[in-house]
Length: 249
Length: 277
Image (cartoon, rainbow over all chains, first blue to last red; front, side, top):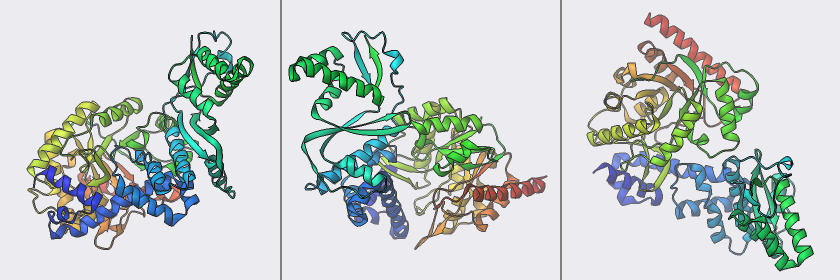
């Protein structure tokens, strides 16, 4: 057997317990193959346990274990870093918990907080840097740590309660679908629930839309006074959050 | 080989010890970190590593290079590691004689190689490419293994000797792994320690293992046992200046316990020096 054939057989054994592939290693290899199979699954399970502590608290240890087994069977790891294995677990939770969307939303929040923690460094714009900005020409550079997810439930409140050891609230559905943003300010990963207007505004600004254009769109949607006030309010909040890391004019 | 010898005693720096290492001077000559934990884009891990590096020499120890992959080493991985090397200026850069990745699948385990001529050619080509990309020679660690391939053309220590000769790499000799593999596969650990190229050993790992249902498992979750200390005492007089350290990855004890184990390593090394003299 060539080396690449041997490695394909090992992959087949690890990912699907392929008995035919295992047999090609010979009978004497059976105990060792069982060790590698156990190590493989234990390693992936430990990664998910560590990454989704509060999701596990919410659904319970046994249900979480079933979700881990389903995920490991559904999606073998591919990245050079084990940390990346957490990225697709919320999608598995979405499949398993179709009727309970807060579970996948909790999972997404935990995953995004972990990713933000090690995302690219960028210093937030300080108040002192705002004096000379020409807001008619300004475009904002948003922190590379930002991630945006959709939100239909009070998952952030549930997560916060679980994180502080409090009794979590019952699941509630939002009056209308919203979004959640996750980012890092300094060394601290943070999150905030937002409405669809702010979600769209952040997506547009991150893609390069000027602040003046954003103001125009808000005026179109809400009228002159409220539109300008809302755009200004969002800008103030983004600056306070540390989401803005550069302003080009 | 151009890797300069370093004589000293160190610890694997794990998360529970970060604060102590940053707050107070710790009696170690170097620390070793898992490279992949710091091959991230930014954030606190990189800040911590920079702070630690300002206080101690740092060895970068990888688990995902996969020098035994039949489809080669990953260029993007090497580029990330090179960036970390350029930032940290590490004492050593090491990884394992194993494979973990094939055709887009990454097992995140140190999987075994058959010690064949084909595998030797491939491992040497992969190490050469890695060393070229990293701009420096590496240390390669002997793994704990749970399968002994009947198709092997040579022993593990013969494989390591040939690999070092052909690539210029050095060895990270894990004494616990020698004991675990020797027990699992029924070879003589003394023959192994006599057979490795002593002049290529730049670093030593000391760790504990546990007894699984059918074989010994390299768990790094308990103190270094007498069996491993005995092999360490045997091999030390044969080696030149070397960096020795305790590896602990699970059931991590208070730092003082690991420093006490490191004291044992120092005592044994002093005895070995007297013996060698």
